Amino acid sequence: MTAQVQRPPAEKRYAAELEQLTEEDRGPRPPGWKLSLTAARSFVMGDADRGIVEKYIGNPSLVERALVTLATTRGLMLVGEPGTAKSMLSELIAAAVSGDSTLTIQGGAATTEDQIRYSWNYALLVAEGPSTRSLIPAPMMRGMSEGRVVRFEEITRCPLEVQDTLLSLLSERVMAVPELAGIDAMVYAREGFNVIATANTRDRGVNEMSAALKRRFNFETVHPISDFDTEIELVRSESAELLRASGVDIAQDPAVTELLVTLFRDLRTGFAADGTAVERLSSVLSTAEAVSLAHATGIRGWYLRGDCGSVRDLAESLAGTATKDNAEDTARLRRYIEQRSTHRSGQSWRELREAHAHLAP
Image (tube, rainbow, N blue to C red; front, side):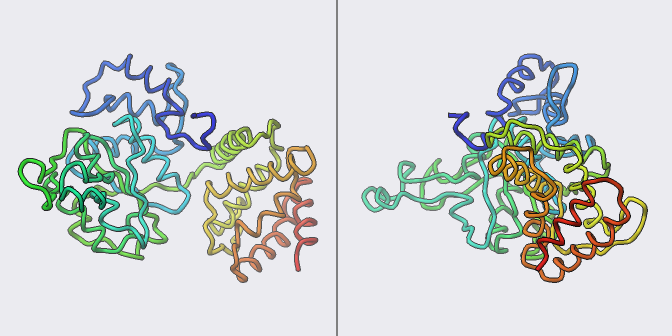
């Protein structure tokens, strides 16, 4: 089944590594955890001596602080620009701590309390009345009763009253089920339960969290990759993995990857590598977007012509990724390519200028 799934969860993709770490782990484990903090850190950050691959490219101290937070009674809040791998980091940490990253709530305007706590099988509810048979546990109830980490994605996209559902769960570690009686009326959190929430800084003000809820989380900011060479290598490796999964068994041109990362970094930061100021785009130009664009470039080249993808293929997909439907960003991108490509050496930049001029309306 894993081979047929487009994206298996982390505990399935890296099952062999988790098994190896579990067998070799001799460190003290927090109550309810599958691994010790040091083994969990090795799983996320990699350990070359053990053959554990690096899965998250970022600050090791951030990962350590995140793990320490989850070992306490406070939730973990990961905030940052879109595309900075917050969700991937929360998935990896949940897999290391609980062996299960699938207890996930996807926040949004339509998210309800039932999707967080529990709901009912209404046919059984009408036939038998409230009972544990008719109760359908949602991720938060399952996480509490099973002692696992629950992931809450894009929490600030939820209405405030839905967000505040977490207040008593995080502080008192108990969920009341008033429809039931006796011992079934209260669900107490087992050791190992905690919450990892994510929010991107562009949308965090959509439904600002209450001060009471903020106090129940430790906030950690996930920053974009600062090193140019590291970002190139990440885009290359991640896009290569996606291309293999899409049936493309050919390496992408390194010049195309370098051009893509350079362009995204310039337009994201507002400065070229030589310090020259450029117009920033309002669109999100994250590393994740760069990986997606590199993937599309390879798909276009392979399935249309049987090659690894060209600068022309990159230009074909660039506007839809970088500018979306923003006319001002489209004009900024055009000016950037016209102006900066004349200052850049290399065949790829000349090809980009020519391809984009041909595509321009």
